[in-house]
Length: 84
Image (cartoon, rainbow, N blue to C red):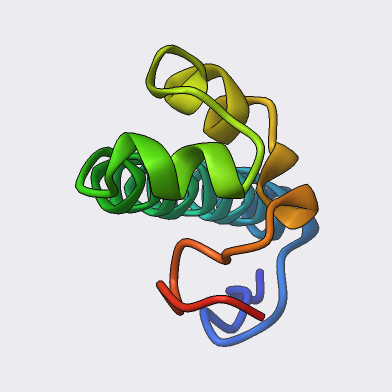
């Protein structure tokens, strides 16, 4: 009776690790997106009402704008903090 080499690829084990790695990657990506959204909301919240009006939103629309991903339509990108 021969013993299997432990260094040999085993599909069932590989699938288990792949599922875990994919779940981890999704969780990491969602966490990074959440951090980006918080940063964008924080930066927009520090702007004056006049500056927010210039880019087309009101203070009440900050969270909805960021969470819906409408920041690409604004005149200011949250990460740059400057007018285009």
